Amino acid sequence: MKKVVDVSLPVGPVHPCFKEPLRIKCETAGERILRTEVELGYVKKGIEKIMVGRPWQETMFLAERVCGICSVVHNTAIVGALEEISGIKVPRRAQLLRIILNELDRMQSHLLANYSYCYTIEHETLAMYLLNLRETVMDAIEKMTGTRIMSAYVVPGGVREDVPDAVISDILSALDKVETELKRYVKIFETGKLIGLRSKGIGILSVEDAKASGVVGPTARASGMECDARANEPLYVELGWHMITRLEGDNFARIMLRFDELFQSSTIVRNAIGKLEAGPVRLGGKVTAGHVKHTIEAPRGDLTYDIAVDENGEVISVAIQTPSIMNVEVASHIMMKDLASAADVTSVFISADPCIACAER
Amino acid sequence: MELVYERDLRSMKLLILKGTSQDEAVLSLAGRLGISRQHMRKILINGCDMMTLENIVPRLLAADKAAEGISDVLSIPHLTTALGLLSDEEGKAFISRVEAGESVDSVKKAIMEVLA
Image (tube, rainbow over all chains, first blue to last red; front, side, top):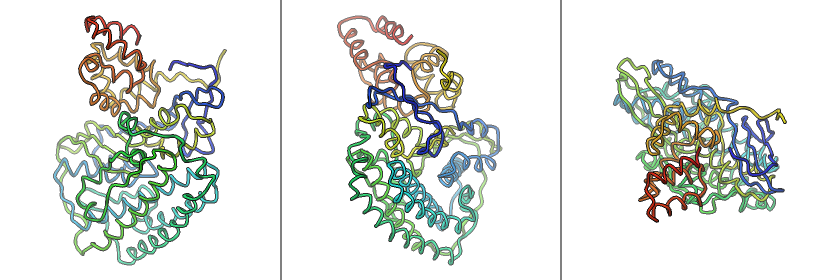
């Protein structure tokens, strides 16, 4: 890109505040950030190309490996796409179990995102509280699926196995703990004066910029944009989902919105558990040829699998549009533009919950 | 001066542009501007960073929605707001030239000269 100043401040690729490697080159004038350039390529996996020519039974495992943090949603998205192509039906109990797992996954992802932000703005105490609370959710996921990540729990036609009643009570206990402790942590964040100084009015994303850049998920909703793929899923609406938005569009709004969504996810899981009835969790089906663009709401926003398979179930082409592609781009090019202090570069970036593994696929 | 940490990113940028959806977006933009895919790739690799290239599909979709009239014919929202290849002032200047009576083809040629 064309350089406009001589002083370039590199952040990363290895940085204590970043969970994953990426390099942001900031062009500065004194403390002010004029513009930034992002350098990727440290964790490029080429999963889209690896999937081509392989049978769908292999690609559903490959999809999970796009991202270690939200592997559940990649699994759900690719299986949903295959089901849509082939018209495979999913029993109601399996639909509810999928929602329970996906919402638990959203909770652990949001807790990790908010942990990262608090760590980045040097509020390590609150950060560690949140990271510890995330373990409660991770334990619930492990009890439900047998593993913390990459569980391959969602399979075409349903879920891999049913969940016993004992595990359901463990999940409910975990939700009790999360809800009780989270209220205290939200209050700490909301009322912390130093947190406010580092978060309020910093890294503002206007609704116009949000629309021009295609930003999605909590990052878009914190700027007042109403976009959530769950709005198109009647079962979610039946379970009490509603659109949560904020208008400030700054770091504070993005973190608070995730806190709000944590409580909402907990309510959705409780409602789904309340509606669980005995029945099959997996029906049969056969993958047929077709092409579909399937979108679901990942913890970070719209996740789209544009996939074509032939009559043998082999993938002809696939394009994975992860939410981090849009969110990382917006965080680095719009939110950071004209930042008053270089010290805010990392906090603004982390507030958008960037996932480099997802962005690089 | 040889910079130790500066890498040549052109091959990585080309890999991004070869992605299924990115390639479709490049073809569509090349068609709008009346140039070849290779030429479009070269302009994008020289003018955009890696993250913009990854996000090219949603950005061009948003530009498609915003484009109307002369700005649509000249692909101004695509080249300014979406990709940052032209500044807003440059975009407005090109639109004014068409409004002043200059032919679209000649302004398109001028745009290509700036992009090159």
